[in-house]
Length: 271
Picture 1 (tube, rainbow, N blue to C red):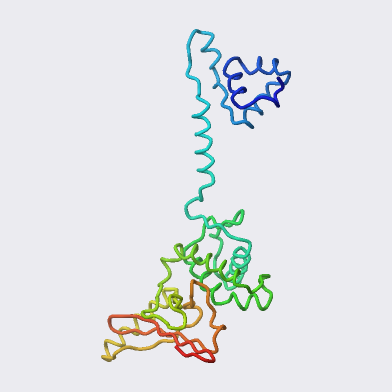
Picture 2 (picture 1 turned 135 degrees about the vertical axis):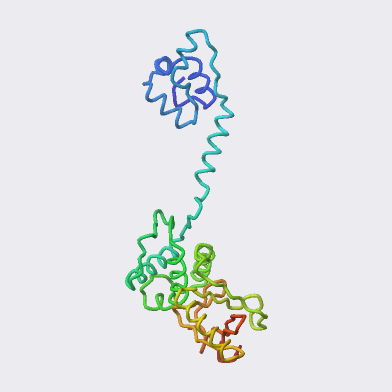
């Protein structure tokens, strides 16, 4: 019987019946070839010192083939399981991530803490994740139209970006305030824009100053326009104000609450 004709069970019986050197002679191959065949067929070989213990009259435990198969399967599943904090990227997502990191680096942001390998983000600081999140949502349409990111403007591309936001948002959460609409829109029920606000130290200082102004002057509330560095519109979760004739966001601050007002205007609708 040649080595290529052996079943997994037959090879298992051979290597646990006699030393590998003897099995190799019987099959007419080298002991290295037997070892490789065992690895390919996932057959466990006796551990070092096994045959010496047999010769001394001991009966060392034999590894059950079924148990070894289960162990191999468990290892395979463990290796396939995503590592904690690892974000897998589709080809479309990778293009936007690379361009966003390039722009952030050009603006002076330290992105050295971002680790990308094999189309996976394997490490990214929360502040960089937050800035990437806002930048992609605010700029993705402009990048596509200018050709800076070579992706067709399709529903599939937008879905892919929405999926990326779902993945990156948990990492960016410490830096992001998520504000959802209080009521429903009859225009698109269940898909109202969400506002993601990057809670930077500068923005927190501005909010604190305005909150003091409200208290000192006994005002109802004050309104502060939001700029693209502060926030991004998100409708699960990718949205661009360019889709509308006009879209404005403002942060409202009272003595006890903070909320966002958004005005969206399209040719036949104002909300």
